Length: 295
Length: 111
Image 1 (cartoon, chains in turn red, orange):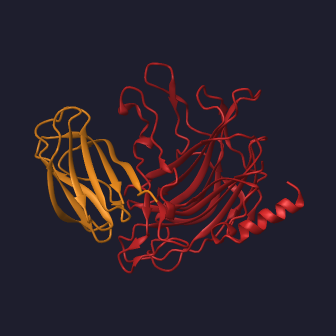
Image 2: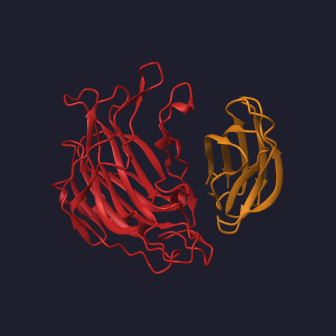
Image 3: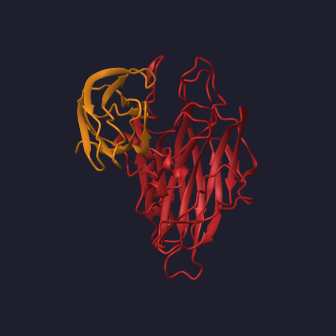
């Protein structure tokens, strides 16, 4: 793209209020605004064969994301960033419960990939108190695999979470993960395996990753936050991470890496997850998501 | 613009006994819903009925008025139709003592 084309593209995007609050790379792969519907975001169901009983318990707890107006008992619908609906992901009301929503794509070019989204989180407002340490974490991950002709076949899963609280302590820091659980065969046909990459262990602090996010002053008021995460599909390394006004150093970031699997070539899955720290539902809201690439 | 439509599995492979309810499902965008309950195995005893419930806030629940049989044989499916339900939906049941059911519950929403 020459400078004139780049300037034209920027002018077009900045004249569109929905896109001008993102900084996408030249090619927009998806732009998901939940005022348009679910935009391909679905439930992360665990692997199984012959019986649902084969599903690992971590996955069995997952349920469907919802389109939410962020309704509150004390004032009504909050609404989304600039519309009515946001995507809501809710846990069950059990300490440590998690939920995950996923979008399943494949990639056509190994190169720079940018993820941007606007988000907020709150516990279910079952108590008339601030409840700022009730949501354990919110986060996101890619589930990636190289192409079938690539020499360096691998499955790579970059994970980042905002650890809001742990065991009642209001922690507020970003963490990453480079290990998953042991891979377990599922069923009897030797075609399916499973591992629980969101197991509570093995999270590591992102260096310099402490951040105090705006939480507001009662459990029903929310404020939207911005995240931008850059990842290079060629090198399979993170190249940048921003949240609101903060720019974080990702030199120490590392994804989960494992051998390539037989059915996942060029996989580009993106998932969001939420965990609760107490026996109360935790809600993770996403207003809109832009994934873009440099091609 | 086509209407929105979603099939949402809201309970999967859950063993129901005694008092049970599905998780609160927010679907204020939808004008109508069908809830299906499928038995994944033969029920133990007679599981009885389920009822549709509405809520002003996703936390406090009231009966909508619709009551339907729960399935009792493996792969049997029962359902209820609901419309004009506001923002929140769930189903609840109180299975008789000694009865249990392994359930797959699906909401089909349109609006």
